Length: 286
Picture 1: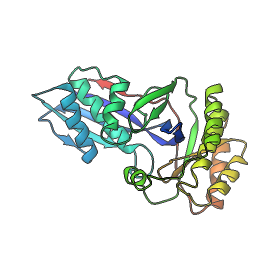
Picture 2 (picture 1 turned 30 degrees about the vertical axis):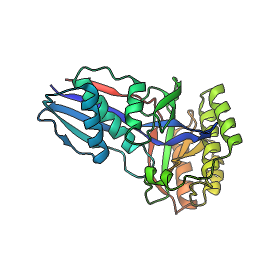
Picture 3 (picture 1 turned 180 degrees about the vertical axis):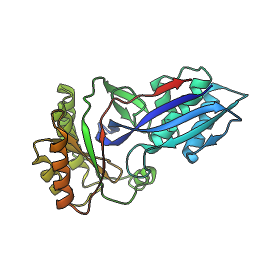
């Protein structure tokens, strides 16, 4: 028996902030993954860190399993500390793998609550584009039909510890509520490339006073001058930004926009181009 569980990471968030005194985020899942392979063994977790180990223990307690003749091998394509949901993907992949090998149903609501008990969670485990309360894991809304948009990832450098970042700012600056409301209206009206891009840009700019990124308003203006660009998002507690391309853009248009931004903003490092996809867990049993 070999079972493989994959959970996507993210390119920051489409939106994040506080609404009616409650934190929320809108996921931005991409085609980069944390993967757990389960094989017969002795209950070991190979790979991952302390949070993944906590997820293994939590999953075992949730499933009430005594004898545990499996080993879990965790690998990830997601760098830590950048705002790409690396911890959330690891935690959810381990939890889902434990439930799967024990034939225990784990709903998205259950998974969100369990993951949030370890640390505030992204909703990448949820099918579609999820709106989640990260501190509790409660799913607030799900957009089911997600256009497969290309996103160029740029990194401002360094790392951010998400938990420490939020704990250090109990009186943190609140992103502009009007911008967040307008962004939500755009997403609710139609989940097109332009609507996603505009909502993401509003949230990214509203976040700038909270976690400033170098020359970011100028970076956004330069990106949006390219007809192929729908908007720019950020990791609201991370170091990356994503240039979101229109669905009709071609590779030559995207490469031209990326090259221009590389020339104009050497303080930003282009890392790769990924694709927006619906979130959710995939499980393969062989």
